[in-house]
Image 1 (cartoon, rainbow, N blue to C red):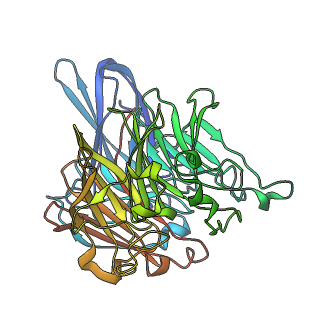
Image 2: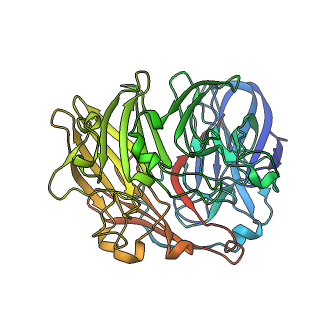
Length: 473
């Protein structure tokens, strides 16, 4: 404890973290606090593992280019405590982050879901993912550029969609890592349009991944055929082998993909479905999907592949008879989604379930042509399967109007205190993103705008905002 070993950025991938190692003569448990620059911005965590004599303390939440004060607290079984303060110097932010224009206009920390160790994470396409505190200060980032996928697994590790090198054109690697940047596993997906150069490489793995109860990974993929982003694949967590494939062309009418003519800008293939959100319900074994290019949300059972329900603006009469029994009927005043993102299951009780999503409010194929472009919003629905009905119960964003309309990108998440975190992720054609946390009454408790810097403008700017707690191992 008198002379601990402290290494900033121990795995050369997470510059605002450190690893502190020391011994104690008696078994003890350890916690740490990164002292914040303002009230309620300190980050405190307790190391997992209970009482031990050898301690490895993963410190997360340092400020960049700053002499950080980190308090290490040791507690022995008899209740005696010892505290040591370390000074950990960090380097400057990379240019793509140092030039980022982050402006917090609302920060009611007494009502925010920030706790003692929670940051708001921003995943960008395609640059460094980073996390900010309530002041908008960057307190974590990864040097491993990420694309769509950023998931926290049940063991506290992160699953990030990366590429094999800085020059590779495809983000076809899923990396299991942690906040300190240590890599545990990598899964590489490959797919090509045919013979030829690297330019023919397509993105086989794309928007979303969920961890199944057996800890395998359920991944949204493109299978290399004529159509893209319409297949789910279960990947064995240990071996990396594909153990199950679900082709969504088998679940939905063939006319939906055969008559669809829009192609993917990356591959030139038919992007008829574009699955952009995936949710697995451990209670029922059902999978929920958001399918952007059909303006469609649906649920099916993962084992039987039987459809449970479909919600879409596509008129019932235009569906083949076989599928009509699955269609949900909206009650008066219920929003039809268009180009939606971030579908999640909030709760399920008997025949009723509640869902939350981000409605971009565009008309790709079956959206609401009357309201498209006027606003984007987070929306909560209640689905009654006994009546096959869907009712809108809450929304936020309509009152913000065209200023917060986003034709692509977006996210909505229910937080631990009941608030909703909403990412209006592509305002002004990608020049900025606006992340807002609102309470149940629609009152803003946090509002931050992230503008594109000069170094961002040559890249598509995408934000996926998720509040994630920092876990210690």
